[in-house]
Length: 128
Image (cartoon, rainbow, N blue to C red):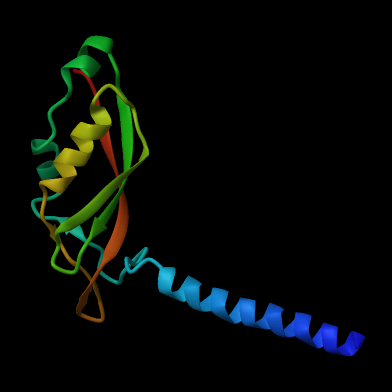
């Protein structure tokens, strides 16, 4: 009787591990953390800053610093999503996200094949 219970418990445990492994594989992010050729903004980093307007609230409050973003670039070079990893507030986070979304990237590539890649970018806000 004890052996049967032990086998039943072991079966449930193994089944749980197998199914949780499948769920993990399905839940994996389709965006690679790096590629042989990483995405680059067309026109260089300066093209990002052309699309960013320093928020008036941040100017008046004297806020300076960096906004760290995680940018999801698809295989065509378009920006699918942008997440703020560390922000400044006062409208800087939103301005950085909006600026990145307006920029076209060269797609990331592995072995010459375009792939989805996520990359981190920091946007500097500096008063002059």
